[in-house]
Image 1 (tube, rainbow, N blue to C red):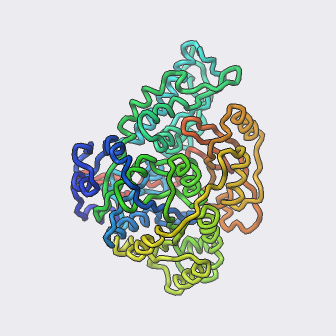
Image 2 (cartoon, rainbow, N blue to C red; image 1 turned 90 degrees about the horizontal axis):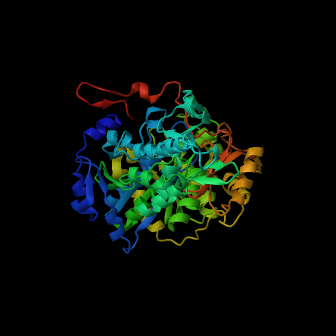
Image 3 (spheres, rainbow, N blue to C red; image 1 turned 30 degrees about the vertical axis):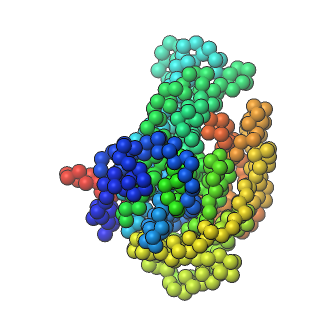
Length: 553
């Protein structure tokens, strides 16, 4: 059966019953049908003094076009912990329509380990991302409206971008205001995908409505003729934007196919944004369970680094254990084996590709000081010889491996890793950040490039140097950094998979996100508005005469 057929043939519980299992009564739910609901902000306030459970972070080796199944493993771990009698909760991001209709497809797991209702979550869900898009573009409209009616704030340069939650490369750079109406000022504009919008980051980093409004007011939107910054609050925009986000800030409750509670909230990408779900969802999950399983996007050099250096710093949290997801075929891919031969047994290619997983392990264990276990997401093409070889190599590095068969067996296929994680979360850690907030902007960039990426040095464009100097003069040096680069390599070159030779990181520009409270560093040729592939997934998505959706995977 396909993923969608498995999901449709599984009996779900009413969301009210799922909520009751974690101590949330119906009065604190805003239901969106039988199987999804928003959790009232009152729950977050009431749980404030309750003891936290253990936080488990799921990340991965550098991704490949083959897919590693990080979300699948996250769900399997949550279900597996329930199988051994532990109270667990799953904390994930919301899927963006960009990859759903693009190359990746859905983001709700697969096989026997999925969150549901799958079609709803992958599409409009509860409208959070639409609300973020609207708030973002309301601010754009208010900027241009202010300029139209006399430009009292003396805008000389607008840095705020419009957004849409679709992959549309045509919108990367556009000319606006071309109607030739009186007083309309034409200018060049740009679009980001919504999940890269600063509004998404703000929603995910805000602690409450008051904090959300304050952060929205602090968004940098442009510079005046004297080079001074202009903020959203000077346009009186933060109130209306907060109104649009008043429901979006409430976490969404759904369930896995095995009825494990799942809070799905916020959805920034990790290659172009900070890659974590909301602080509210994470902190709520820690209060509602003994074990909270969350996920950081793409490889550990991106999602995990930002989770640890940005989210943990701002939210005053830390993981008690880290799961590093890997597959035999992905390791062979990083060892230079062609996709056409990736399913064939190849110990030599597997050994060559181990450098990627070793580097991620070293970063998590020795650079961040965290407890790590490798989850091998099993595929039918994996041979026992390859599995044994990988297990032996990791044991020699002092790293435990667990074979996870969640896709085929559900929670039963994750009992081994669940038991090992219970023990791992009790072990002592020496958690530390990669850089200090007091470091200069370049020192932060260079520490991540050196310690996490393994780069020889960092090269800055003239434009990047000017922006760094501008940001430092404005007094924002002490903000964390969010490096936007390719997810496929430790370098900023997506084709440099093995990273065996010396390489540099090339910073082409930096952007101040004063509302979210971090600095985006654009490296290599990464784009904050993706494009569709030659044959997008959208071509295969359809609905039949009975209203059944087909083609989402």
